Amino acid sequence: MTPYQILGLGSFIPAKSLSNDDLAKIVDTDDEWIVTRTGIRSRHVLDDSQNTSDMGALAAQQALNNAHISPDQITHVIVSTCSPDHLCPNTACLVSYQLGIKGAMAFDLNAACSGFLYGLEVAGGILANRPDAVVLFVCAEALTRRVNWEDRTTCVLFGDGAAAAVLARSPQGLAQVTEVCCHADGRSPDPLSIGGGTAFHVKNGDPVDENFFIRMEGREVYRNGVRRMTEMCVQILEKTGLTTEDIDVIIPHQANLRIVESVASRLKAPMNKVFVNLDRFGNTSAASVPIALHEAMEAGRIPAGARVLLTAFGGGFTYGSAILQFSAPDAAD
Ligand code: COA
Image (tube, rainbow, N blue to C red; front, side, top):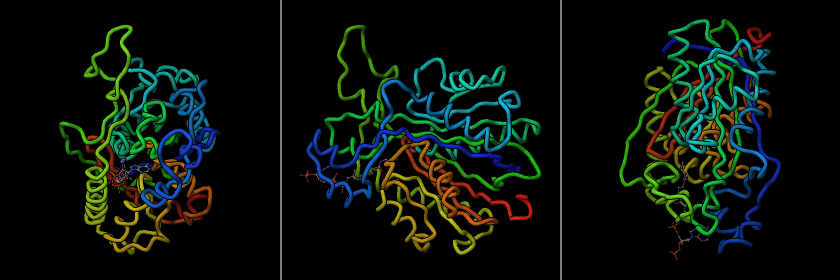
């Protein structure tokens, strides 16, 4: 692929945090079960007054500020989400409107939890075709709006949040996107689904049933998550002629600590190379990898010149990986 740069990152996490003990008051669960099976201790929940596009716009504004790019320089807006405000208009148009971006092509991309990797691949195609483009790439999810709060097997897993990146062909930036791999393995019936599309038949006045919400076959999803994220890491390492030892930091999709540990163990990567924040945020789907990337960077967990491996897996099934080369100190000056 033609490499390009991440010029700036931003993220937004809703203020309200819901602990496992809070959840135990509304559904038959407890902190010990959730922590032991998933590693999740709390997750953030979007305020009723806000929607996915609001979180996306807040994360995007921060990314624009950090990249020193103004809204009028943006040529393309992509929003990765499987929890859009509406089926139509797309969330990217709503984010553009909030930021005062006028005239830029704007569209949504749905690859569930692999949304960041898929967006990096799509943006790479745009930037290869149009070298002067400046892409605002947002990942935003409000999955707690589609959680069935009576289903303890799913409602404990998900949280809300957003992150954004400004992408361009540039000699300098925060990090170079060196390589991306993305694949899918479509299934029916879906082991992981969110209702609300046109397959969900509903007439005005009908109550919604359980198919409207997130439904999941946990064990099937777990097995595939471990297998596909491992495969994606191995594939991109082979493609770039690298080994696990050449990677400084691994940022996997933040779904479940046991999944993350299994992938790290199969790659023979020590856990101190792996960035984990799912204990505080749960699974924020497409936003999970870029929220973790931004947090790792802000926390000083990504040294100058570091090589970072990203990987994700999600509904579909979709899966992918990417390698980022962070700028060395002299290049970043
Ligand atoms: N609290 C307490 N008990 C719970 C529970 C909860 N929140 N959720 C499920 N249980 C119970 C089940 O009802 C079951 O009880 P039973 O044996 O009496 O029937 C028992 O715990 C075991 O359930 P099981 O589904 O076999 O547990 P598990 O070890 O597979 O863990 C998940 C369940 C969901 C944590 C695990 O399958 C998982 O993480 N899957 C992947 C999820 C994911 O990452 N999805 C997003 C991918 S992008």
